[in-house]
Image (cartoon, rainbow, N blue to C red; front, side):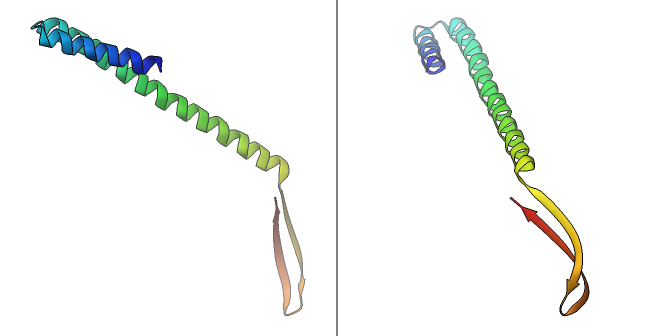
Amino acid sequence: MIAFLLNGAMICAACEAFDDGREFLGGLITFFELGLYSGNIYSAVSSAHKYNRRKKRTFLQKLKEHSKVEVSAGKMPDRNLALLYKITF
């Protein structure tokens, strides 16, 4: 919410500066606003990647702890030899 309000205020300030004929001030405010806006987007993407990585790591760890893989050999009625592969969740 703070980023939204700050971006809105800077856009309004830039528009007012351009309307008053102060192109340099409007350009300067726009330059800093683009930097702030780009930084917010970069931070949001970075945070989403970190969150997803942490959730994936946690999920895989729980899957390793609570699952079992068994491999065994045995005889089947219609075949001489069989290889059994069982995964338990």
